[in-house]
Amino acid sequence: MLGSQLVDRERSLEEQIELIQLGNEELRNQIIKSYQPFIAKCVSDVCKRYIQKNNDEFSIGMMAFNEALDIYTCERGTSFLSFAQVIIKRKVIDHIRKEQRQYMYPSLDAADDDELEESPIQIVEAKKVYQLKEESWYRKQELHELSRQLKEYRISFSELTVISPKHRDARESAIFAAKQLVEDKELKQYVLNKKRVPIKKLLNLVSVSKKTLERNRKFILMIFIILTGDYLYLREYLRG
Image 1 (cartoon, rainbow, N blue to C red):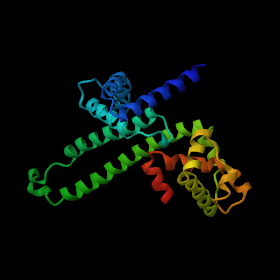
Image 2 (cartoon, one colour; image 1 turned 135 degrees about the horizontal axis):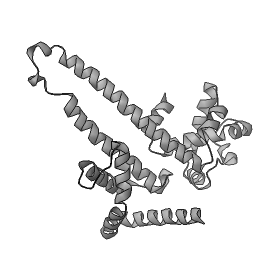
Image 3 (cartoon, rainbow, N blue to C red; image 1 turned 90 degrees about the vertical axis):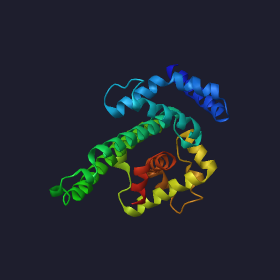
Image 4 (cartoon, one colour; image 1 turned 180 degrees about the vertical axis):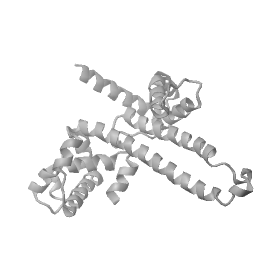
């Protein structure tokens, strides 16, 4: 019963978002006000400290949530709150990055004469270190969200490490199959609704056997989730 209530609540929220995107500003303000605790929690998770409404980071989170209301679509294959969480965290981390950059990279004009030759090198190295830390944070966030979405498809990371195709050709074939599911509107909607691979219909689009598709179906679903979601860094992995 609790699960049913939760689904109804999420569906109701997403229906309200459709009304907001049609121009219902009063409803927009109500939704933003109602979800302020959710926004504060998302921001606090990034900042690793309690965030109050008078903090700059909270304002960034509010603007990000408002932006999410405008750009969310059901075709993304994830709930609005999961999508909003990603947008909020990215906007807040971008804000933190800008502030840290100002702190870490002071103007060379203020440096002593003896430091002028070393400062550019130090700045470049500092930027590299910061960029690596930032990318690592984004990857962790994406992996956390991917793990959550995989559960909706009854898939876990642990089983994927065992059943994922080991050979490059097999992986590329599975990725190609996932792309066909994404590009075909009917098949894409089927996967989003049913949370499974339409093997028979997919056989008409790929040159692999039914047995191969069935063996790699969970890996194909994982790639499908990545391709239809907001996974910037994981998509780069697929290109690689």
